[in-house]
Length: 62
Image (cartoon, rainbow, N blue to C red):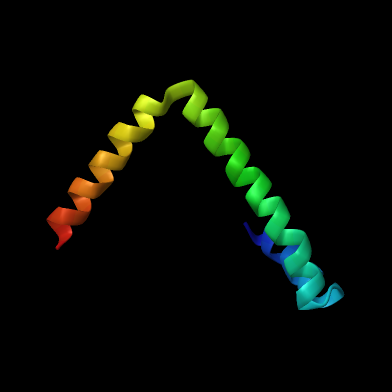
């Protein structure tokens, strides 16, 4: 984890926030969408059960 933090630190210092934002946001969306579509295609039932469990845990914590 330390090395990743160092790389991000270097990126933050090298790039202005706007440039970093323009790079990070599209990459983030591509990764999220790819993982969502991939996992939904493969095992949407597992996601549904996990989501239901998370909802139940959330209700319990209230």
